[in-house]
Each structure stands twice: as structure tokens, then as C-alpha cells.
Length: 467
Image (cartoon, helix red, strand yellow):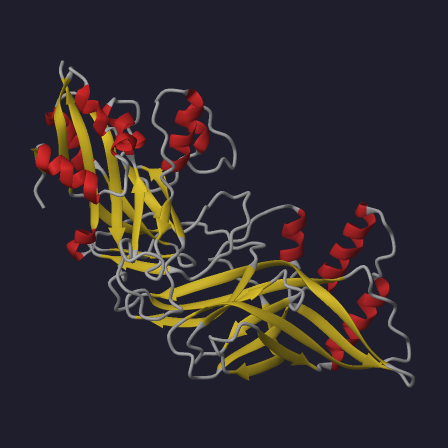
């Protein structure tokens, strides 16, 4: 597509007012009355796109424990394995010495499902971890990432197989464990680390020591699984239950999940994304297509070099309204969803995310990344512009509005005005499926989309000013 600029005449302006969802004053078209203005112009600028692999996606202590396998012609075959520790609750009593240990049942509440084929059995096997890394790293407040794995025993503790009904609101997966050695270990540790103190320090010490000794579980999907499920760690139904009885009564004890993370691996052989092999190395795809997939770190990148080239010939301008729009391809299934919200983080040729504190010239350790959204918010705080537009993309569900069906739209007015004035030299952004700020607890999902290059556009309404 060639750069095309044209002066909007009275008829075009009238059509714009009638068809636009924006109030003319909101996008600056009232500036026509100013004597220093030459006219209102429109330009649609082609954007260069690419795709790269994100590095170090933190999956530690997120609300959803992902598990399963999913094969996609575009993205490849992905497997998710979750590792989780569990701890006693404060109400757990002492287990009588003469108690007969019946079994342990791991209850996992399904809160998320991703896939197309729900007509075949899904299976999971639970193994006991052989290391205490998950617990130890939680104490040190370190991160775990999707490329890591935990060592676990070769002998399974228990397994289950089931069909997933995606239409059912409440799905509870139950894995029974009756290994006598594990049951006895759980009984011994439960009696040794009963939480009776109100002291936070004592509670933390007892709980963590229990976790170190019991170690935790690996939740491993079967080789023929066809969907990926998300188990809600904090749900009251997601618990580890010990069943036992005495001559007088039958009883249960519940344990809750504590530290967890998910390992995610993908085989992209034979897919359009087969060239994605190393973090931050980008590839350009035919027709300018872009792909995004959350848990596997497939990230689109948009470059505004063509906008810079336009500025070189445009003269002195004021951006009245700038809109970035991206229409995505239809999903293959109701349960293969695009993210409900996406965020664009500023980047450069390295494809790494820039720290937010660079606004003030100081780089802080573990500083949240710098996004166009925060740049516009900070501009409002600093008072450098009268315009303020929150540029967070919103995914419009086809059922909610036919106009924006399958489309993300954002207002980039302030950002591009800053670029035109030479106050920002950042002309690329990476599109992430959620807020990757490390201090926020966002669920990891398999949300994904594809968009063709001719469905990605930057439309600008601008005013030429007299010199």
C-alpha cells in the first residue's frame, strides 16, 4: 500500500462526522477554525511487522496451573506441565496413631480450557518431586519461568483419565493416590508440623519445612491429550485431601496448594513459525502476517519507520487523531480465544522491553516495562500535552458489537504527536497479551491470534500548520 495523503473537503468532513464513532472535537477537527491552519488531512500508513519469541516468561505463583497438550497448524504442538507444592491448613488436627490411611485424592478445579477436540479422553499422571527447589525459591522470592522443569520420580503416584465437557461450568478432576509410602510420609509430616501458633514467623517456618519435606507434585499430561486445561490454584475445590479412618470414625484432612509454576514447551516444526528458535530473534512472515500466543511467548512487533518517513515530508503538523487497528482471523473454536486485552510495550532493535523509569532517566532494578499506555499516562502527569488518551487495546467480542468484530483498536494520538515533535525516538512496539509487570498476578493462558498484514493499519487525521 502506497502512502496517500489528501485534503478533506467539506463533503469528506461531513462523511467523517457522520460515520466516525468519535466526536469531532475529541479528535481535534475543530482546529479548522484557527487562522494558522491550512487544512485537515488524512493518511493511511503501511506498517512493517514481524514476530519474535519472548524470553523469560514468568509462570511462578500464577492463579492458573496449566496442564495438557494442544496441536495447532500455525503455532505447533504445545505441552504444559505444572509443578506445585502443598501445605497444611491451620485447622488440621493430629492424625491418630491407630488411624488407617485409605488414600489421598488430588482435586483440581478446571477454570480454563483451550483446544478444539474435546471428544477424546484427557489423561494426567501425578509424580512426586525429588527436589525442594519450588519451596526454597519461594522463600528467596525468586522467579520461575516457562522454560524450566522440576525433577520428579520415575514412579507415578496416581493417574486419571476423563472427558472434558467444555459447556459444563464446574469441572473437577480427581486423581487418587494410594501409594503406602507416600501416605505414611504425609501422616508423619502432618503430625510433626501442626500449625497451632498465631505467630506469623512460626507459621511460615512450620509450613515451609513441611513443604520442603513433602516436596510436591508434577502434573504431567498424557501423550494423546488434545486440550490444555487451567486448574485454579486458589479455588476452595482445588485441594489435596487425605482420607483415613479409625475404629470409631472416618475422617479427612485438606491441604492447599502453595508455590507453583508451569513449564511450557512447543514443537514448531513444519509451521509458519518454525523460524522462531531463539529469544528476541525476529522473523518477517509472508504478507506481513503476525501471530500471538501467550504461554509460548510468540509476540508480534510493529514498526513505525514509515511514519517517520512521512514526517520528513509533511512539514509542521498537529496530530488530531491517530488510530491503530488490527483485525484478527476467526478462531478455529470457541475455546481457542484471543486475549480480551492486549498491551503494546515500547521496544527497539533488541526486542527487549524498555524499563518504565527511563521516563526520568533512571533505570531501576526489576522496573516494569515501558508501554505506550504508561507513556501517555506520564505525559498527563507531566502536563506536556493537553491530550490524554488511554491506548490500551480492547478486543471487541463479535456478540457485543458487529462494527468492531474481531478487531483491536487503540488511540495513538499523543504518542505519535510526541514522535512528530522529536520528544520520543521510540518507533517500535511489541504486542503482549497481558500486563507483564512482574509485581502483578495475571493468569497465564494459551490465548492466541493471527492477523494478516493488510488487516493492520495506522490511520491519521492531522492538521498542517503554517510556518
